Image 1: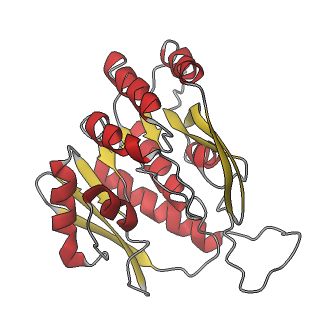
Image 2 (image 1 turned 30 degrees about the vertical axis):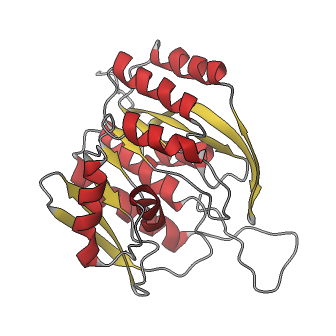
Length: 271
C-alpha cells in the first residue's frame, strides 16, 4: 500500500493570541485544506477584537534557529510569509530562500494592522521590496498596501489594476494578487491576479457585510500557499483560495464578548 505524503507549508508570520490572524490562523487554514503547517514566528502580538495592543519582535538569532531547525529536517513544499517585523528578519528569510532553494512562496505584504499598529518597521519596507519581491512567487497586497509601496492614491477601480501591477513589477514582483476588499464597490469583492505578461484575471464574489474581517488576508495567502503545495498552478490556487475564503466568511459563526459597546467596530476571527 503506497504511503500517503502530506503537503507541507512553512508559515513565517507573527503570533496572534486572538487566534484570528498570523501563525494561528495560517495553521488552521493549512490543516483544513489538507496540508501540514510548520511555523517560524517573527513577533509576538497582544491583541483582541479591538486591535493590536503591543508587539514584541523575536530576537533574530532565535528566529533564525526556528527556520533552520525546520529547513534542515523537512522538505517544505510551499511557504507563506506574513508579518516580518524588521529588516534583520527579512534578510534571514532571504538567505534561507536561497540556501534551501525554497519554492511556491506567497508574500502577504503586511504593513499595518487594521487597528493602525505598525507591523513592519517603515525603514524595513525598502528591504522587503529589494530582498523578497524578486525571490517570491507572488505578493498579495491590498489597496492601501499598494498605495504605500508605490506612493500612490489608487482606489481599486478595474481600470487602475494594470498601472498598479506595472508599478509592483518595477519593484521586482513576479506576480501580484491585488485584493479588492478596500475597493469602493459595495456589491462585489474582486481580486485581480496579474502575471508579467499583464494578463489580468479577476476573481469576483458577492461582497459580504460581516464583522468577520480579522485575518482575511492571512486566510487567503495561506490557502494559496497550501494549494501550491498540493501541486496546483498559481491561477487555480488563487481561484480555489478565493472560493474558500468566501465560504468561510459566509458560514462563520459568532463568538461571545464580555461586553457590548455602542457603535461596535470590533472584528471577529474567521476560524
